[in-house]
Image (cartoon, rainbow, N blue to C red):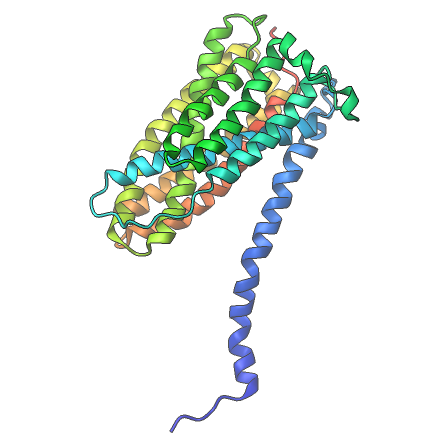
Length: 335
């Protein structure tokens, strides 16, 4: 005969479950606060003691740029992992719901906000009358800003269509526009710099967005053998992406901070400090990726690699936020 449990026993048993259920929303709330605070508060912290002056509204621009980068990562990661999954035999037909439409909407709003800043002469608009929309067509930065707005709008329409893979073209246009914007024609060898930025941004978007969608897919599939195969396939491609990101990042940094001055500028300029923080975060991500890869190859259950991979996704999100901050800071002086 089974005796009924006392009310206190029921309460005690449900306590850990209740705490576990509330832990995830609290973690998400904390991450959201960090995500907003990093680009908004970052410029003042990075500029402190350098003697440099930040541009008006640098925090808002950094936040908008970070949202734009994240809006690129999500759909490109879905397309990338979808292609990888098709090469794994016996994959379940069910796939997680696409976030591409929401990403396109966020990217459109971020691009619209950045275009309004360009339309007011790189100042924060305080009223609609201060925004000169027609003036966007008169400058290179204005045309690139309009291109990004229209490209995200088109990407959203493509995500809703029967052929969502075609959204790769407007998303590619956004990345090309970002690469050109980051290297004005007054810069030395601007096309070389734009090419490096384009490769760097593409590989970073595939790495971060791809890992996010791999984890979403594995959670959707459950403990299936195909999940471990997909994770292993992604890990092999991610190693190549990391090598490309590192090479283009080092090259781009040396173009803006010559080797003889890089150590001083890494500590004495806002751009250098933020770049150093990004490098350290990428190093942490690389260690987490190596940890996940080791578990994937040596653990009896390859899916235990998902634990460090989840932390890697969070770290990659921080890298994207710092990258957005980096674009809003004054460039270092080319000594």
